[in-house]
Image (cartoon, rainbow over all chains, first blue to last red):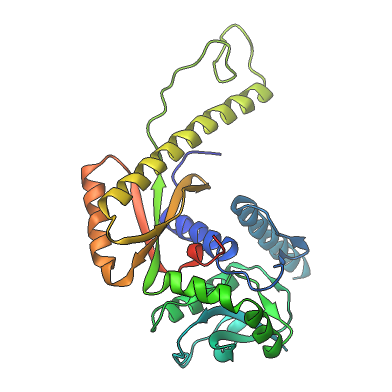
Amino acid sequence: MSDELIDNGALELSDLLNRVLDKGAVIAGSVTISVGDIDLIQLDLTVVLTAIETARTAERRRREARE
Amino acid sequence: MATYLYCVRSDDREVPGGLFGIDGAPVRAIDAAGLVAWVSDAIATSVDVTVERVRAHDAVCAAAVSLGETPLPIRFGQSFPDDGATVAAIDARRRSLETRLARVAGCVEMRVVVAGGRPVADEHTPGAIDAPDASMPEGPGTAFLRRLARAGRADIAREVSCEDARHAVRDAARALIVDQQPCESARGVSYFPVLVRRDALNEFLAAMTDILSSQAIDLSVLGPFAPYSFAGDG
């Protein structure tokens, strides 16, 4: 992983995702969250971020292909 | 229609008018086994992650934390078949939830982010993977492994800096900090969550400013947030 500093926007987004996806009380027996068809259970933040970006790119391409 | 859960609280503060959650659904409060849950309608019990939904979830918890007693934020994605199922699930964990609500009462979460780290000495152990060998042509595989080795050293340096910062923060603000979690690392930064009394927030921020000016640690403080990191079973 690169040691370059990430800008404030990326830092806040990274922190937000870490906080909200990985912390907090769990009431349900299990939590399944997914991006499209990809289950994200027990994947780390880096993978989550990558998966979200990948899913968004794929969606963008699908939309562009339809237009 | 499913019910999406944002947070649980011990007081019955009304949901502010015009507060919308996931997918723009209005947030409402329901009585839940002696506690109060902030929820909204959801299309299904499985919620896909999008940045917008994560932001919406956090915004509801932020609104909840700004009113009355500190709520217990719920992890993203917990949706139940209906209000009754939500109440039943909360009731089944009521004792544990009450304990956790008591633990975070009157507090907010601050997150101290440590970027960079101590400078990594650019020294190479002879024969180590990150030591260049002028006599050998370097292929892409070797270059890749060398980058990994350098990144590994940088990660370690950053984590050491984070631990230094964590101890410095604890020493500087011991009386203001209710609880603290270990350092974690992601995407080139290390950070640690701190549970701070709401009435001591300004003092805490002043203590952080003192650390910034007195020590060579590059840190940022994010927050206040609902106490996500202190809402779990730990």
